[in-house]
Length: 178
Image (cartoon, rainbow, N blue to C red; front, side):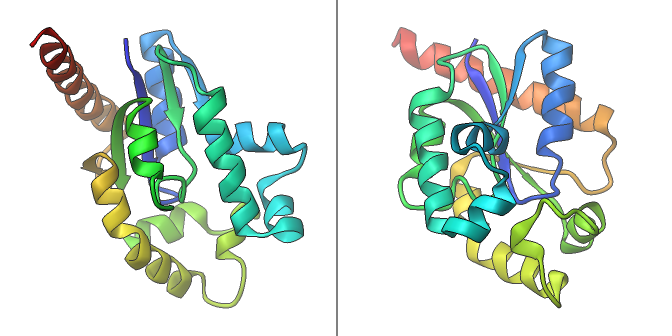
C-alpha cells in the first residue's frame, strides 16, 4: 500500500493523527523531523540555532529523497517540508499526501509552551503563525488534499483521512491499469 504522508502547519495534528492511523493500520510511523534529528545528531531547535533554516531544509530534502520507505508507512512531515520549490511534488512521489489545516487559534493553543518549535520563539507567536501560514498556504493547498481539523475529534479525523486515503489509492490503482 502507498505511504500516507501528512503535511501541514505545525500544530495541525500530523503526529497525533499519524500515530493513530499507523497503529490502526499496523504500519510503521515515521516523523520527518525525528529523521532529520537522527541524521544531524541534533535537535531541530539546535539545527536552526547553529546552522539556520536553509541547512534544516536541505536535511529535510535528504530525508525525503533517501530515507523514506517506498510504501507501507504513515509519515508526519515537518511543518515547512512541502514549502520549498519542488518539495511538494517530491513528497507526492512518495505516496498519498493529505494536508491538515487548523485555525490560528487552534494552532496557538496546541503549540503554546512547546520549546521544540524554533519558528515560534519570540514576542508574538500568534503574529508569527499568521505570517507563516499566509506565506505557506498556497504550498499546502498544492501539496495534497486538504482536511480541516478544527472541531473534529481524533476519531472523526481518523475516519475522514481513511476515506480520503482509500479513495486516492483506488484512483492511483485505476490510473496504473490504464
